[in-house]
Image (cartoon, rainbow, N blue to C red; front, top):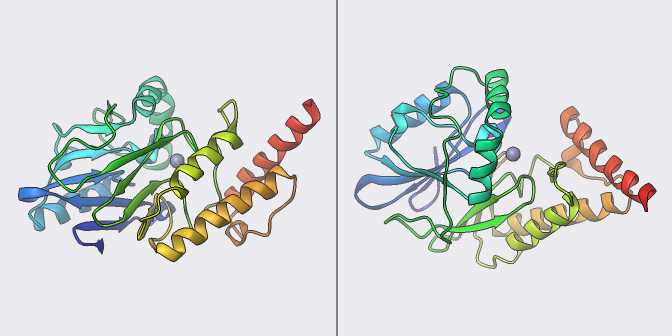
Length: 258
Ligand SMILES: [Zn+2]
């Protein structure tokens, strides 16, 4: 666990370089964002929290993908785990597919607690800790909700702003590039970001945050123009190259249909 800002802790799992974020609140309460990935990772997180005297009082799930909707009894089976209304709805509707994903890639989780999300219509997490403002959009997944902590300038970005992953579009959306651009603009409009925590990858400072936003816009622009961008994140990552090929195919299909 790294303390990336006062009272904000990030753990990074070996699998997919996945991050878990903990925000300390009042009286030992804490907010847990996207705990992941393996059952052993969640056990280790619960042990770390109890050793620090921290107790989850709320959860946040950034988006309805299986590796972002995990939970365990040791984290507290009565803890409300919020998500945007759209994300909660999609997680309920696509529960079967999400379960297939977790069973295939990280078996052993308590499925009774898996993907149980409470829709949050409010603009901020209702808790007594540091303010956590929801930045909702539909880039990468429907109802994706980043959290911005104004007091420390921390942006918990979910599956955006990664140093190791290209922008990954929601290919089931009616307008994958449009949605992604809108989401990225919503994040780019946050002028006070001092620390960025991507769902997969490494924590970055303000300059790195700006660099990633620019790199992601450059990637989207290049692909939409039908070019193969020189993006170092594509080097040697087979699965990302496959996603990238899907993005390019989408552009050429749409072009042909015009
Ligand atoms: Zn995702």
